[in-house]
Image 1 (cartoon, helix red, strand yellow):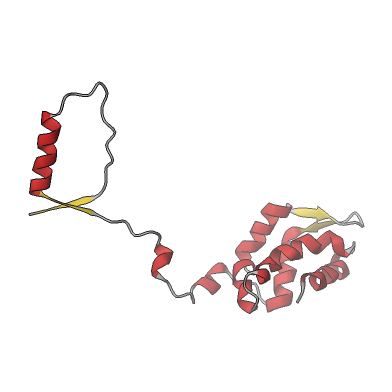
Image 2 (cartoon, rainbow, N blue to C red):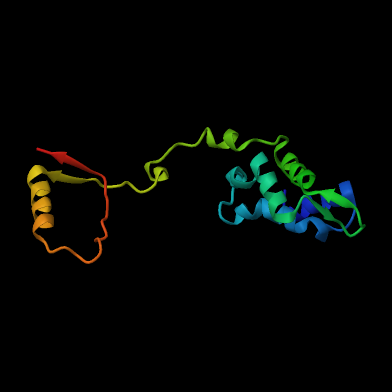
Length: 145
């Protein structure tokens, strides 16, 4: 259902004008612009996003009839009109295939030999003492024979 149709439905439920609700319904359906099939709903059509909507628009709005309306109720109605249920974020994510890039950047380990370590220690002991301690970049490494 398009956002303006959801807004019309909100007018029937709580009164006021379509403009009172349009921004909230636009929020839920904004992902259509980036993923134009039903899978767009995985992003903003779940119980978690109802709470995000409250954080963005407040706990309630006052419609043009002067009536206080719960933003959570508006969000729940939107999702129920589209899906007949309010899924959790887990309902969507449990079916997602994990890809290697989802774990973040792979960190490379520096491998040092004992000779590399001895050379580094020798360089440290033979260099003149600095007036202030040098900055040391500590990276994870493995020492190997």
